[in-house]
Image (tube, rainbow over all chains, first blue to last red):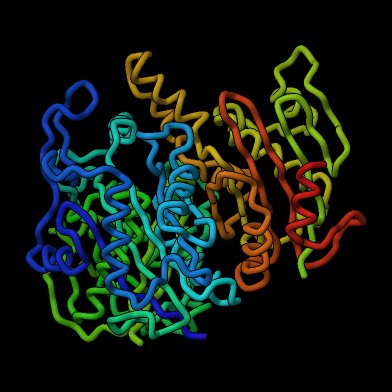
Length: 360
Length: 202
């Protein structure tokens, strides 16, 4: 069975549609800015956060994103009994409902959009978005649903910001994934969505094909990546095996690339072990920041735009090789025939996930 | 057809294994310590974990103690399929206190403010490299486990260690069960939503 994926949408400080966001990346624009006194102890922090004037609520972000995708679909897909909504987030709307920010938000979504099925909320740290797309395809394959709308959202809260400050994990200016001078992450906020379906005709624009995906745990540490890249390595091996493709069929990799010393080093080791380190790779974290539960969706949506436009996007912030194993980091936006890409993600809890999307 | 081959419950006042109450919380030791000692866990990393991770690790140890076949699976054949209602709220509250009331955000608490950390702790303890998923839902959703285990087995996993583990204000509601292709124990039951609902109440 073919599983189509399309109708991608992104709401971020860089734009209010996938096109807007992709356009910003074509000019290598970062959403990052200094926010004076916003951090713990009134520290100034560098974030990819909506300006005060553009600030919207968590639920408004989700509404705007859903309304954007409905314009790309035919019929009333969202409220169909054949449609499931999967929600990807780390903290949900917890600034409104601290101890129940995810499940209660899903109940609200169900009521507001008259969904026939209870939304499924995936909360698996920074792999949530990639994992949620994999789950969507897994639900369509045996015929449980015909269509799945996958939407991911997280915002920059005091809670998460102070937490990353306490770990000394934040960079004080724009982050530099895979670079020798990288010194940490930027937090970002965004909402992004994709739609998967067995029916090609629901998409107004030609969709792509979801090929395969998987997840794997490092079984090593809850807050540090494996030194051997074990989980990422295993997940990519499995995803490739399920895909029937081989590494030579992958035209580029959208990596996780948080710009912490250990994460990016881990990715280089995993791709070296996979013999995939010659494949062009980017990280989009210097554009959007780390948007946590939205990241997998933002980065998959942009990679889908790359494939549609045959345009590799530069890994912003990278200048000099900074990992022990060589990677082929994309240094300039460049035209290339793209038939398929690999998206990977890794996160706290030692989790890793990957997926492959190809041209229809 | 897949089978539920063993299961257990942990609450703040009792622990039941395959439906039989094995321990009640009446000793002078802390309840978690009682469980830790009873199931002979002996794992130094256990003591730094948050409450939800401790419960998850105890649950996975109980499942292993009841079904000897679990340890025979390859290191990437067991998927972890977990869910709850309140995500990591129990530790979220404590982390928020660390910066609102106690002076500074605690990194040791912050790393537990994601619900899937319990999966990481179980994976580390057992060296399980398999699939992971954590789902948040208002109520225990038996159909999720039934559907997702049937999806994973056998294409992405050979067995699933499943859990509903909700911890809030230090009150505990946990139900763990093991799903595999063969009815490997005497008490095995077919994996159906109805059976899951009944076992959870047991």
